[in-house]
Image (cartoon, rainbow, N blue to C red):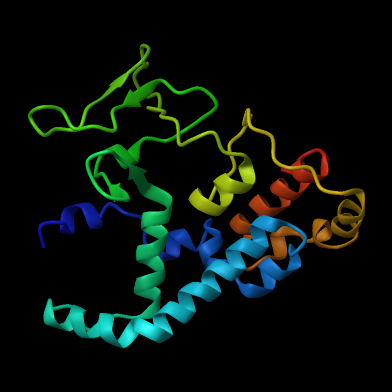
Length: 212
């Protein structure tokens, strides 16, 4: 496949399972059902399962015609998560696209690079640094002005020092979370990375110091 070298650079399912809520267990997400992000993630995975039940046979048949046998729901979940966490909105295509190399750029509170949504006259996609980047430093672009509940749902991580505050929860929800999931210990967790992110998001939305 022409795209095989690019596909090999993408996170594998077991890597996504360490941090992305699309791979969180139902039980883990239910523990944080007072967070809208956790509810949205749970309903999104249920939607994916329903879509697979409705169309999985047709998609598997198309895959076999292309020479790929054994297409599964886990393949579908992986593909959705790749697109969800790495796509770009551009002006030269309908909807969003994947952009090899561009998707290696991380994000942070202050970007040091930018890019154009339009193609150049020669058909290339352009991006550039907006300030000097020291050797060994990250190239950072803006993923959008998103609070950490959106960052975790879409990309699978929380932005440290995010300038966009997450929505604060009502006092009753704060008390319920303090009495419940905030007592969970990442050392005993089956998915410690996802649990840690959910705990830190809970603390931010409750106005409490981060546990990590």
